[in-house]
Image 1 (cartoon, rainbow, N blue to C red):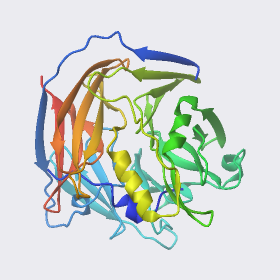
Image 2 (tube, one colour):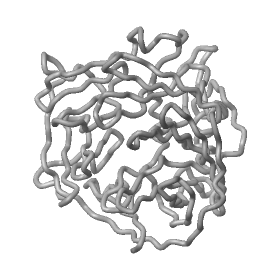
Image 3 (cartoon, rainbow, N blue to C red):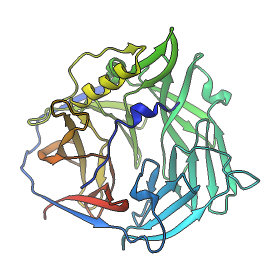
Image 4 (cartoon, rainbow, N blue to C red):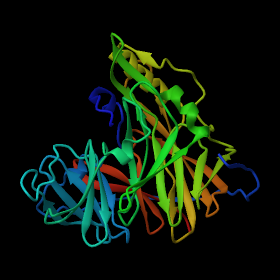
Length: 375
């Protein structure tokens, strides 16, 4: 179930300009230099909604196209990220035999054979660009719900490149269970994998309720990335990550020199006041948060970013201190650097040509901030 509390969502701002465990401590540590620039996308004669938001976007596996779902026009914007220009705008039907049958889409996945996976509140569907439906997985199906209690559900996080496996987490209205699920949608089989090191995330699930009735909640983010025959499972509150490979789960944490290893404060977990919940979100933003890991195939390195909000006295608009971590292909931490302070912040989108791309609103036109290691 997705968090639909718009007041809380509006507090998230964007860029404008355990089987075994290991502790990282042994690898060579170096100071790296960065190249940072910006690029603007040529929209042609179209209006690109990606200029305003990219909260439902995807990138092709060959890193040549960036897709953004235009919810206002029920269309998929196709951006050529070789030439940074709008290539196409694919309009879909909502109703009818070739309609997507959804009022709101949460995520989009680029799949082989010019097909796309679309997630709505209750299902994952695979369509081609003509709207033909090839696969539909309803999250309330018995083989997925089996083992879950009332008021518990499967929440989709990611899809493999072939569109045959869905990775997700447990969602509960009033409780938190650190659990990952892998769904084989061809065989209709589910794996349930506990993540015990992540159970402390329950301290950062903030529930808004009224008269003991659940209204909504702010939840920790879990990131699940498919990487060849492995999966990387991380979260936004602590630096530790799980590596899942060949049915084996390994936890790895890192000793940072510049960046806190995670959140430390204790927060009120339940409130009947919307304003109090919003203030709690602001307070949590002042502690470190982490992005998912991004893999650079050319340099065989992983990148990750952290951010911390800084509020001036009497202001609700923060600045953001952003730092970058670099890891080798074995996920050993080899460097970290405080980049700079930004007025606004957004999550990294993808890596292309060894540069991490962030969304940039350039006077309502789509742009990217690109950050890469100097050669």
